[in-house]
Structure formats: C-alpha cells, structure tokens
Length: 254
Image (cartoon, rainbow, N blue to C red; front, side, top):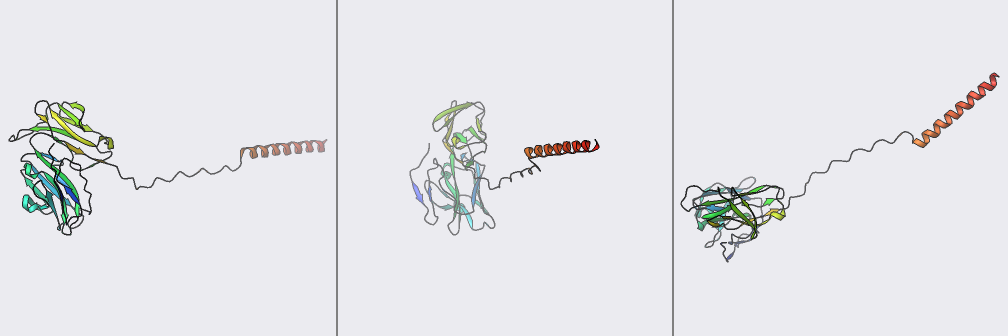
C-alpha cells in the first residue's frame, strides 16, 4: 500500500488535507460545491483520461479544482490539467497525479475531497465517493500491463476486507446489494499470478431520516346508537308492556 507521511495544511482553506491517499476521506464540505469524478472510481491505470467537475447551484465561475500531491500542495487545474468551465481533465494520468482533489472558491470555501491513485498491474476499482446505506456497489478487480491498450477482469480474483479473505469471484467482480456500515472498510483483490492490488477505502454513511410525515391514522368508527345491554333491556320492556296490554284487552272483552 503506497502511503506518504507528509500532511499539508492549506492555510487559506479552512481544512487540513492529507496527501496519504490510502486513508479515508475525512474532509467535510463547507459549502454547496460538490466534486465528482469520471470515471467514477478512485484508482486508475497509467494513461487513462480522468475528468473532475465542480457542481455548484447557480454560478460556478468562482470555483476551481485544486489538488495536493506528494510534491506540491494547493495547485490549481491550470497547472496540471485542461480547464473547461467548472471541470478539469487530465489526459493520460501518471503516478505523479496521485493525490487529493477538491473544489475551491475565490473566498477559500472548499468542497468534498476525492483521493486518486494511479497504478499499474492489478487494481481494484471502487467508488470514489462515500456510499449511503441501502446503495448497491460492484468492486471490479482488473489487470493491465503498463503499455497495454485494454485491461481485463476475466480471471478468478480473491477479495479481502481489512486484510481478511472474504471470497473468490470467477469473473473478478464482487457485488454488494443494499450496503450497510458492516460493509465499510479497506478492500483489495488478488490476481492468481500477478499479485495484489492497492487497498481502496469503501465508506458507507447512514441514510438521512425521512422528512415525510407519516400518514394520519384512520378515523375511529362511529359509536353504536345503543349498547347491547341497553338494547336488550328496551326489547324486554317492550315485550312486557305488549303482554300486559294484550292481557288487559282480553280481560275487558270478557
């Protein structure tokens, strides 16, 4: 697992950003900007094209993509990528592009961060942003020689979570349906003959409680017009009165 020991402080941004790309993202958004990445993963082979985009409601002209690497900190897109509005594209990533990326405004506000790692050989492709409980995800174990045009996942791969073996998959893919916090951790995969991938961090966040009010309870049924004992007593009095009346009429006739 590649790791650097240097931690950099971005003084004009209100947060500490670590260049250790093997660690979970502990940076929280301070503004409405959100950084996304395409393709949507955190580990890339040499020479792949990667695009990072800042999504900000309304105008985004004052936001730009920046990065920290093992050699430089808080470097804007114009220095290392191709700027296009709120997006920044790296055509042909290299290990020197491994680092922490984020969106930053002119006033120093920052978005979420995304860790990027560039490697060759075996890599495990997973989401670059945290999942939410209930989401589904597929981890893809891939292999590619440095100068090969295409990668392959057509092999039996062993998967590990937090260093513990969790299973073999014949097509190099492990899927999780409806993830929970129990699925969170460091994952890596192993090719039968080419070795293991670097670890990736799979983060699972709790789903926000629903703000929809529960439906109102059904209305109570109307109360009966007369209770059963009272109804029986009324019928009894009616029959008694009717019997007395009939008896009285019979006595009068006789």
